[in-house]
Structures are given as C-alpha cells and as structure tokens.
Image (tube, rainbow, N blue to C red; front, side):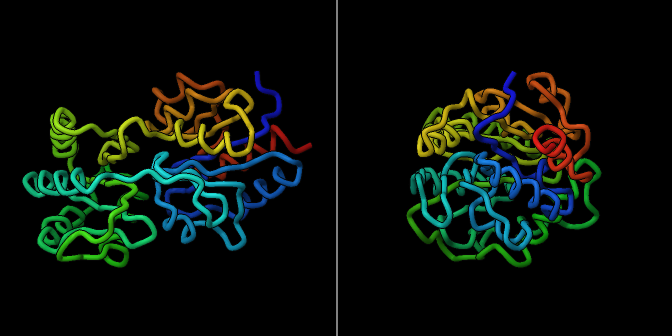
Length: 284
C-alpha cells in the first residue's frame, strides 16, 4: 500500500477531463495544493502537447507532461524526449488508410495535425450527424472540432518528425477491420498501437507507451515507479497503471480496467472524481 506517493501521473480524457473536454478549476486547485506539499504531479495523455492548453484552466501547471501515449515528454515548454514515426511508416499507413477509407489525423511535432486534401471527403463524412450511440460525446466533439478548426488539409505531408497517428471510425466493425489491417502491416514494419475507445486506434513507435514515457520522465526527477501513483480510465492507460506502485481507476472506467488497479474513485470524471479522490486522500 503506497501511503503517500512522491509522484502522481494523471490521464486526461475520461480522468481529469470531463465529457465536454474541460478540466475543472477544482482539479487545478487540488494539483496546486499537492505540489505545494512537495508532491510531483504530471500529466500522462494520449493527446499531443499542442492539444493541452485549450482544455485546461488558465494558470494550470504540472511538473511535467508525457504526451502522445509516451511518444514525448516535456517540462514546461522544453522537450525531455521525443520519439518520431519514420517517414516510411507515415506514407505506408496513409496509403493503407486511403484504401480502407479510414479517418486519420497525423500529428507532426509542434505543428497542426495533417490529413491530405485528397482524403478530406471521406474523412469528413465519418463525422456526419447524427452521432452514433456508441461513440462518446467527448470523442465526437473532438473530431468535430478537428475537422472544422485543427486539421491542415495539405496536398502533401510536411515535416520529418511525427508524434502519432489517430484513427477513428463511426462503426465498431470498420475500426476493428482497420485494427486487423494494422496488425498485418506490423509484419512489414514494426510499430505500437494503442486504444482509448471502441471507435479509435492510435499508432506510435514500436515499444512506446505511457509506461515507457513515465519511466523516462521519472528518471529525470530521480524518482521510481514504486513511489508513484497513476489515475486513468481506459485501455491506453493499462501500461501506466500496471507499472506504478499504486494504480487508481476512475469510476467511469470499464470493468476490465477496474479489475487490475488498487483503488477506484468514488466519483466519475463528470463529477470531479480526481479532485474528490486526491482531496480525501491527501488533504487534511
């Protein structure tokens, strides 16, 4: 039993983010208080670094951020580490996605995400209304925002450093088929996949996940996994939850996540579950 961890890693979507994709002021305040007590607080998210600022309150601060499911880590604006997908893999996957008409977003480092203009029609069609019942409102809103404001519809791929691919499908059948296609592609070129909902899959460098990113970040602070707590809610959090000294699942997490953790929050992400959990445990 880890009584008081030296470090805490918090997932974002479904954990400190509610289903409207916002971090509450209460969550900011509890993080501030724990840091005043001398605890290190980090974010470990599937989101790219550039996505974070728009969903957190003004003045939100943590000691470090692990992004893109372990592909990169930052202290402030300074990169501690950045892995990159190869150009060969990027071009190969886009070609396969086009063949299968799969919604994709490619995330270059420190630039807007990219979808090629020739693929725009079928990508936009994937998020046509009405929203499928099985798609979470937070993921649906994020995709709507992406196609309207955040994707660069380029004629060709720009840049040489890429943090991840994000893929989405409005039906489980289509995304499952795409996951099978990716598994076949792994026989030609190695990479890692990660899933955070029933309608998505992401691609990162081989043998990279949140746990590997956390390990690199902790090394920078001379901390260990054994003295670390992590809170998460979905499949892409599993490596993180299995690697730390004390693992916590959100009340809104599926049962398969709850089965492998040490504790479960009393409240969901829409009820400020992280705030209530950390306050009850660490604030007298």
